Image 1 (cartoon, rainbow, N blue to C red):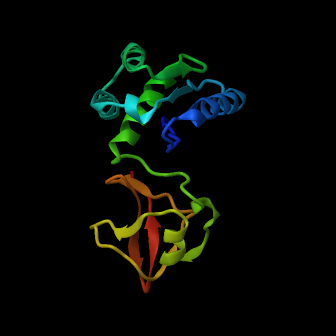
Image 2 (image 1 turned 90 degrees about the vertical axis):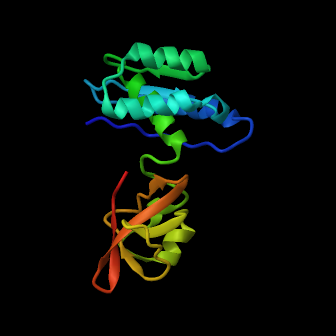
Image 3 (image 1 turned 135 degrees about the vertical axis):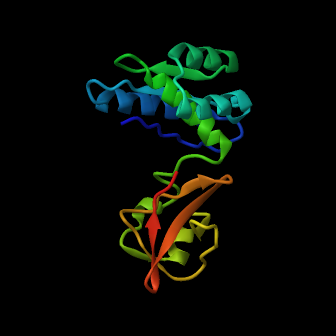
Length: 179
């Protein structure tokens, strides 16, 4: 299993980034599974260029190396660290930043209060929790109704928005995980 998680920090001066990095690093070092290769990365919006997005998309389709990741991070002034094992996690950490910056990849494991929603929820409650839009896989907006959630909403990052995709299920809907 290989995945990355990205924390989006929206602030003009990125003061919280150093604190988030230190806290996340501490948690990761305390909890990583033996045999895994965790990595951590922090980048300010202004440091994330097209080359970083391209690196992320490339990492999804081809084999990229630690040296490529470290070199790109160094050139951009981005903080990147391997935290254990082979340190190959630096590849996924940097790729995750680039993919998230594209605004069209991945899904949110938490946005707003989405993790507090369980079971059947109204579309209004889902939108109020931090999801930007609810729509079908075909792109049709869904503005009314009830959605049965598998666990909690995991909206996809699409067009720079948190989109919860749903399928019709009788008179209601159920969420589908994409991204």
